[in-house]
View 1 (tube, rainbow, N blue to C red):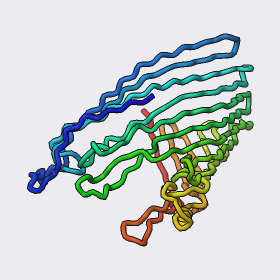
View 2: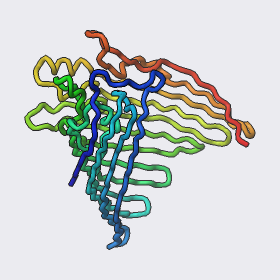
View 3: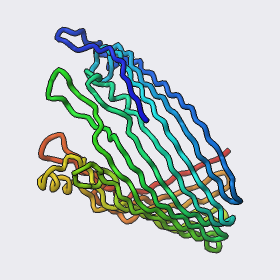
Length: 336
């Protein structure tokens, strides 16, 4: 359950309002008060089984008492208070010293940022905390030379933050909540220790992060890759440390899918997309007495794929960000 109340004493910016001095960008005087009450119980009904239920109540208040508030740059006194009840539970079962399984449940919330109060009329905003219900379960094995873990997860996410400019020029920017997202996927990793200080590892994930609004097309949300993966070799023996790691970020989109309402806007959404990119890193360290000499090569294979696309300030031009090219770094660390 969530409650929210706002107390606000707003100062509009009528013609003739005295502006702040040129050398004062803002004088905000903001405060945050965050209190939590929680209870947790640990139960051990069977050997190897541990059940930990709990409950948390949260009150979160933001307050601004500004001579010159940020962005609007005139006097404002306003505050927001949010409350939430957040149950949680964890179950762990150790089959053996090397093998265990677990499951988790939790509800969470995220209060709006302080910037939601940097508007001329915060009383018109209807923003509430983002809310989530989280489920996860997995298995972990840790043996003499081999460690493996895998899990599945599902997160139901509501009240995504958004803002827009009101068509009424006397209102200005308004913050609202905009729809829901469902996250789910599977993750796993494996590490194997080889003789003479070597080890190899690999990990990966398949991630579903799509809008979950009634009657709307379910599309992947911005900046959420569909796949991730990494693998490499590690070495540590005596004064030498070495690693070669390659990381891959899969296909992702960079624009808000909630704006898709037609074939034309779907084509626009698909144009803000990366096919994925990878970045390999080689690192070598050597200890000489109290000093450690290191050398790294970042982006070993000089991948220059697109990593982000954003709408440009001047239409119809967009801003593309590319993977940084191959780079070399050396360092010396001395301990004393």
